[in-house]
Amino acid sequence: MLAARYLLELSYDEIAALLKISNQAARVRVCRAKSRLRALLAGAEKEVEP
Image (tube, rainbow, N blue to C red; front, side):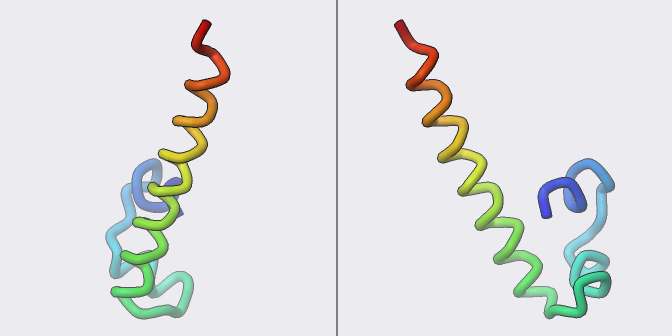
């Protein structure tokens, strides 16, 4: 989802059309993916700290 939104620069409408879901569902999926990425990065940051 994040690759489609930010690397391919697709709009929510374009993502929704590709996945055959609603625009709102595409927005929710991107939001959830961002939240998961934040959590993963926060966990990785804790592992690196001395």
